[in-house]
Length: 107
Image 1: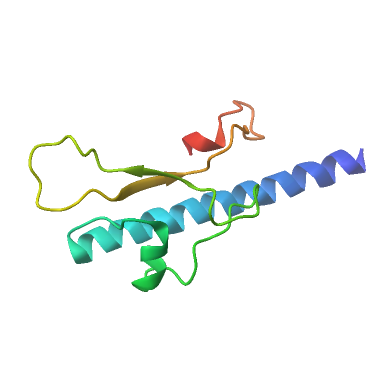
Image 2: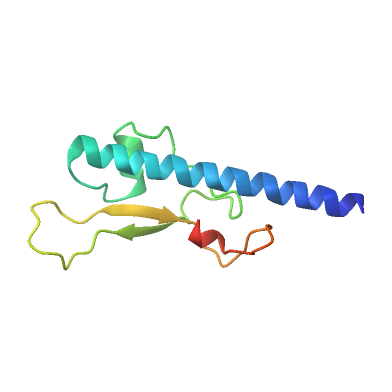
């Protein structure tokens, strides 16, 4: 059963890293919006503007380009600011290791 423990510990480490990455990106989006009064058009804008050193890698995909982004609703009343990224989530259909088995995409 050592394998099960190691496997579970590995998954939990990835989950912690995933939560950290999502939190970092969300904080950077919020700060960008606060400072520039608009949302970034892509995650790389957060790096270019100095809000992130680099877009964090999703620990489950091993890529920094697989994040699922959400944009401001384009159909809102007239807004002088163009739409941009308002939120980010994990893009897979994987579920967490905790007892409720929520999808990572809901974090």
